[in-house]
Length: 206
Image 1 (tube, rainbow, N blue to C red):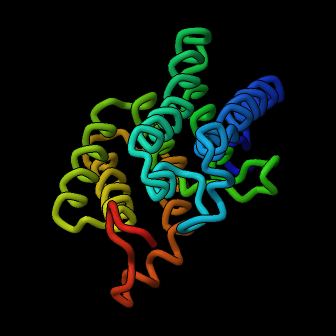
Image 2 (cartoon, rainbow, N blue to C red):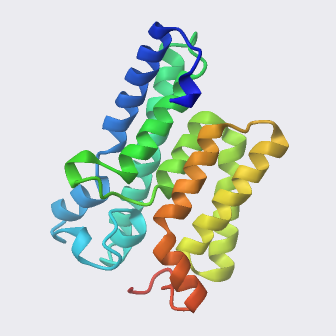
């Protein structure tokens, strides 16, 4: 609530509504839904137990993983772009909606707040917020993934480098910092495996 201190009550209410809209959209577990529709059962019962594209890839269905990746990106980007078009007077609104979508993906209430790790949705938020930062993130992820073949290491590296780029390029925001910290929090088990040298590689089972 510190970010809302000093604002008029009407603005606070509107901000909360924007956040809740983003949260509801972001909490849609596309990976879980797509896997079930494709006959793979509950995606949380395999691999890392995550609902994101990397775990969907462990079903062996690359098209399904790509569809999940796209859907998780769009649920971060499209609500932001829509709000920017609908309410241009509220310049803060798109990032609030994006932040809500990001938290919804991480902590969806209908999955008992056990969601994904937020990487794809974070990229979607960056697309809606600033396309230059989105390019930085995408380039860093692809480059590190090509060199390391480790998805988690790529995500962590890209998120940090993008946050640093946001300060250098003048696009920093406290919400970007919070989202980066949450990505690290959600990857805490991956970080332990990276330190142990036991983290799985892209295209291989966990």
